[in-house]
Length: 205
Image 1: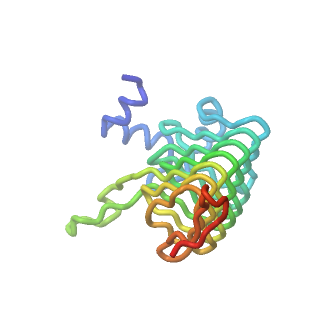
Image 2: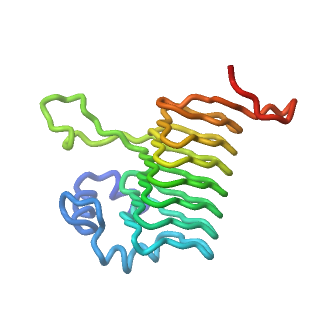
């Protein structure tokens, strides 16, 4: 078992590590983590760009990967505190997005402005405790290659959006979207799909 795995499986070690990596009740890591530790651990691809006004709440015990020729625009928040963040090649994360792991985004993706993807849910079932003290559960979000999400979309934990999909602006995606589909609404539903037989985009009845 690696040292990182030991920390993850030991509540005491995890608490000590958390205090060393970030201030109490904060999500943003300490500056020494950002400046000295993360560059040694996490991958930033060739010709990729993270804008100066991006908030990178990145910790060393979960993965952060940014592929080649990809961009994360200003005012976006990236948080891998409870799960890995993977962003593929030639992908652009638009202004003001929020990505909270576990999230996997493929190649040639376009995310417009103010999109929220969070792979975590807060536990709430025990009414004797504040929700903030009950921990979280996670389920990975997956966005497959060549997909485009319009502005102000929300993608919920556990959702997979297939290859070459379009998700209309303002949609709330609560369940999987199959490849080669156009989806919209709250909750999002498939409006069109690409029919290989006719080689056309057909409206779903």
